[in-house]
Length: 309
Image 1 (cartoon, helix red, strand yellow):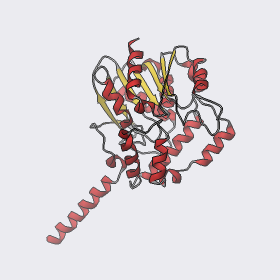
Image 2 (spheres, rainbow, N blue to C red):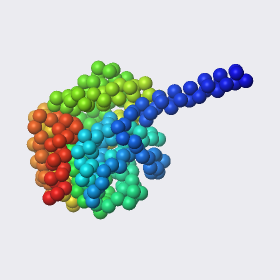
Image 3 (cartoon, rainbow, N blue to C red):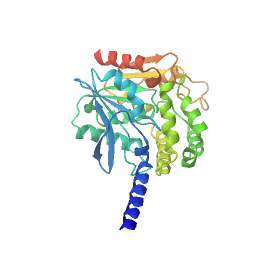
Image 4 (cartoon, one colour):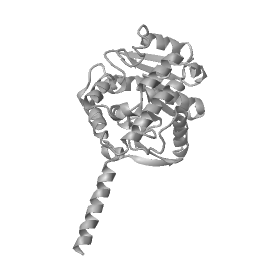
């Protein structure tokens, strides 16, 4: 009897340890997440605040819904704020490693349908901005306005540049990044790294020990390939709703300084202005690629003003 109890205890401890070694268990979010089933995935999301208008936040590459905490905390008193983990990220399931941006757009529009949301203001950062454009173009009647923060997909790359970038990334590089490399990579997203962003680095380092880290790494690399394969620059003219575009003036990631050292943010803005009929642009001083986190107060003000006009 004692032996049986001992063995059962060992098994329970082992099962518990396995559960806690998944990325979804390693990450500790400030808010309790809800989950909704869409196709074969369970999508994690938070639904906070109240108001007549619904804001829906889409995170970028290698990120999760926690990246919007400072924006949601500043906007939820006036607006309903929904932030999701895309499939493959955060606390959402990872039942594939080859999600395309179109797949993500389909997931988001299915989420909107299941939650019976109307006139959504869609907000996307970086890869999330590229996904947001595709999401709107797939079902424009679902949306009232579109907010793109340091969006990917506007800068164009030659076939040779695409081939070189794809050859430079693989899952092993992502999976085996050292803590120092992880820290340096995150710091490149900011003009001046804020102390309250330290959780991003700690979470990413902790994820190295997760059992599903290899799957996550494959998701990230395939997302990079998808971003290169599915640019949105040539479809911006199809957008029929008002658009706000926000960049940090000191973005080190967009445009790509290695391939396009002579380009700057203004050239991307000009490309967008030539294609989007109803576009407002805001460039924020002393801010990097993660401008929505680094300068959350200014970004929130710009969002609120855009929604009131």
